[in-house]
Image 1 (cartoon, rainbow, N blue to C red):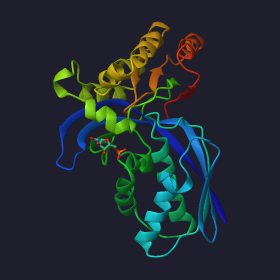
Image 2: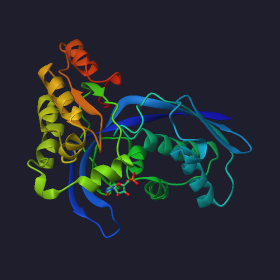
Image 3: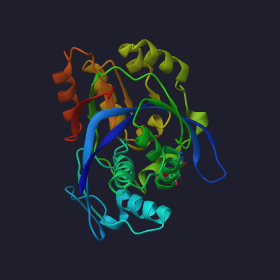
Image 4: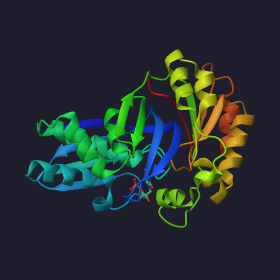
Length: 286
Ligand code: C5P
């Protein structure tokens, strides 16, 4: 028995930090949006748990979030769940696109189905949050406002299927990326906070230009201060004709939203390639 699950990438249309928590995390407010870009996750029933990917840089099986998802699910249902998990990667890794989280969500959903475990959405969401802040959103995989660490999800009107260019500069961080970016975050240095209500109105109106222009991420200036190339890349994408551009998550990917007719596509892609070879063309998932 085997099952194929598509694990979709996400971007942040907005990301605001609204406070520090006693557990060391920050409370966030984010408009999160799935992309049409996905990793293919294949689950085959097997006696033991095993995982393979076609991406050389990914952690060994035991460290992979999808592998840990399978172990956590087995613990939750109180029996071993053998499976051979194969992941065909298309989502750039450690890029701010929730690729690892999407793989974990796909493993939870797929194994629940493959083994007829019957866990409902709330049980799965509880396990998802134990795996990572973005995993509950990846289970939902629809345009949503995310609060707290990302697990309090409210559905929003879906975005129009606008073309998007993702550009991921190859930067190296002094420590684990997300922790490093949050450690350097300082509320008093934020000049412009995302206007969540304006983004939600733009989504409700299906106004692509307003969505693109309202994109905003308070972690972007932090990441730019550590890696100025992120800011230079964003400027170049805007100059090449993108309707709007913003960093996703803790970076380093910058997403550019293009006009629906795709007129400036070639220029925007060429601008992105001046900064990185990791350039992906996709669209917002409606
Ligand atoms: O979610 P993840 O475990 O990848 O986060 C890594 C680190 O980033 C956390 O340990 C924390 O220091 C920081 N973080 C945070 N607030 C969040 C998410 C992550 O401070 N909402």
